Image 1 (cartoon, rainbow, N blue to C red):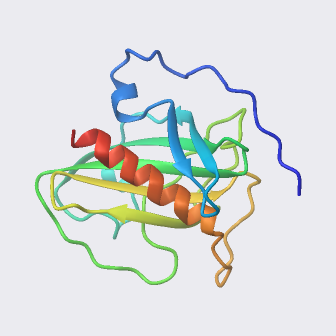
Image 2 (cartoon, rainbow, N blue to C red):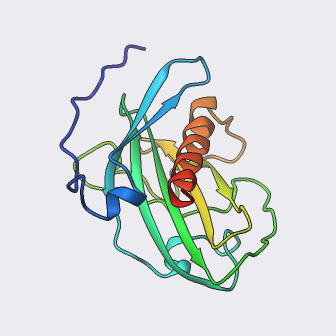
Length: 174
């Protein structure tokens, strides 16, 4: 399979805008094979309630509000929605079997994330460091294929979710 690099789109918001402090235009990463990857911001969703932005067991009571953004890798093959839940205080939530309970994906028209939704996320990760934030990601394929129970998870999908969550958590706690 031959992949082509997408042309670099213009940043969706100016660099000095407050949202870029939370959701940078580009997040550098590394694929499981060691190749450099860049995750590019496809869009930022409006602030939402926690039940609208997260699956029920991803965050518990005490969640005040949520922010979400969707990124695509530089090849346009993988997409991931990253969500940040703002909490009243630390919380623990139970582990779920199968696909992890995580942030609800957000699609953005006109790009690689236009067909990304609840049926398309394949894997995800939730980071609960014990503070006032939960950072989570749901990752899937940009071609819109739906998750099928038992499907093997492509290592690059898990890496994308992990790297985006880690980068955004780091930006929040600086």
